[in-house]
Image (cartoon, rainbow, N blue to C red):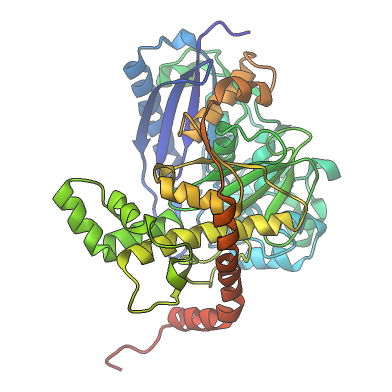
Length: 522
């Protein structure tokens, strides 16, 4: 077992690097963050420079060590989480050949459609539905077809997770979490789905992926001397295999057993749960084999716009809350919560559909759009705010209902993110879904999840479950109100009924807008 008393978790998010140092019990010592730039060279494209990633990580690591006063030799282990399906092409000297194609990049929509049309059995991970252009295979196929010189020069086609582990250790490996959740890898059926890759002309892509495929917490290698000197760390420190940031966040919430689900909130909502059985079906993603815990299966759902809708309403339409907040020197969100708390369940017939940026699950519809219906002259700012957060909760419940239809029944939702600051919102999530909501002491789930995996790699804990038992600590549980849950059923049904009624109108209007409608002066 490692002698050092501390673990380092590294979180590579969309906007920057965040380094956290924790003790063996999961208590944070320090967080230090840096930011990098995303470039958008064309509509639907998003790219980042890996050199920026490394420069920011160096600053974040050194900043965390300096602020904490923790000696480098006291860091027992390191693990990283990163965005998933952020694709790089690397040459034979481990240098990137072009900027990284980010997870949010949707240039590969044509490739995604062709993959969907194969009908291959591996598409069970997409619920037998549409393949998202965000996923890894469409992106590497786009690279092969549109930048053949880069493709031919590449010795490795890899994800951001693989790139960072290689930069730290010099080793080329893959994460079971990344390849199963974003590249259709299934250990139960032999690993890579060769029939799917061959069907779309990407059979040779498999030769470029890093290997071997490691479980979370397995040791990738030791921190190499050059990297250690730049980061201010000790050479030889074990680096453990990490996960995609959202899945690492679920680990940081203690979601390591069947029936538990992580609800990771923020600008969007991500739902990640564990199942004892390999369930698959339309309306959710997964269940991915061994993606988090060996012998378990991981299900995933998500809402594209949640907290971002609340911010949109506050910034543009919450006149009373903004004025009252300035007058009382309090956060406008506190005022909005006050205005909404006494509004009755169902907001006096006002229903909000949260598809402002499309729908990720259960419809996987990029052309869906948001709605607010049932308006009357009696509705106030408080009604509209409450209806928005109710609509978001209805969307989460719609995902859970879809999963329940395939024999996945969450017993507990463990929640992290900015919305946890709203008691109203958290109670509403519990009431709408009829499931208890648990909160944990450390809200920085992804960084803690990486530190937990670092503890496994360092030999401090034997596996991820033991690490979670020792490093994740509950702060409290919000129990659902049975009467409120029953009252919400009617409104959840109305929410679910709305999309089929409006789908065609939404699609026609979005396509019309995208095609370029006549200008007002035409």
